[in-house]
Length: 337
Image 1: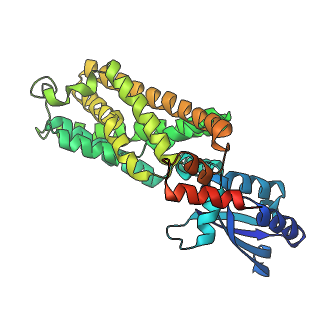
Image 2: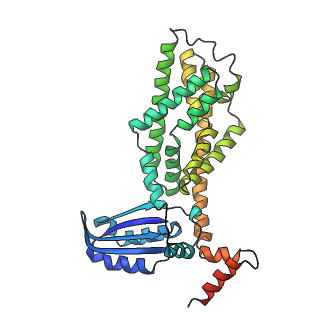
Image 3: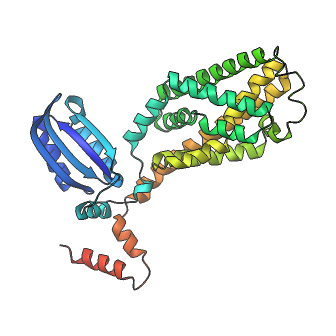
């Protein structure tokens, strides 16, 4: 369930409220005439099921409410309301399957930005990965994977490919390129400083590092894991299941590959650099391919099947025979005029 706050120009409020009153999945509608001051207009508050949010937002945009007013939404963590329950039951599809495209567009736009925070997280993650390689510690490498912030830009590329929007793709590619280049450069400088101190030597990457050698040896399994991670990552973002992203971060070898590449350059181990760069490319390419196909599948499947019947009716039809809950709901709907 989403809570929406709309500031509507007064000449469009009647049309907006008329639509919201009759719209499927909308409830808890409140209209405060003249309450908004900047921008001026009427304040409209309502809750809407995720499954119906795209239609509601699109209609409000067709009324040009956002041009002279505003449309904002936030997720509702707690809602105790029979009206809200009915709205979700009447809305077609399931909330976990619904992709709110405007929300996704805004998120990927934010993830395309090269910020100091992004660069800091990337640099720290790559340095931790490099230290993990030096001390042959898979635990440190896993920690670096979790810390890496690169998947947001990868998801932005997937969205740009889905929507055919080259500027989004270019901004996301720039973010990835700048982020990895800066992180590798910083890690390289730290590695070069460490050599005169005796902390690193040219033979360190050749012996005693069996547990982390997978980083520089990409194979078909690396690509398959990247494909699966791309699917899981996009699904976790579109379904609002951010906790699943941790598994995605741990699955792919982007950050460790960047850390290994920096060490290889510092120690003159160019074969290791080549393997690291190949691993990085394989993982990024796999996630982009799978993530884009996942978004295409979500858009296609929702358009074909997501709106076929209200969620409550589908649950009723698939309920076990003789289920009291299913029978009651089906009976209730058949009795409605």
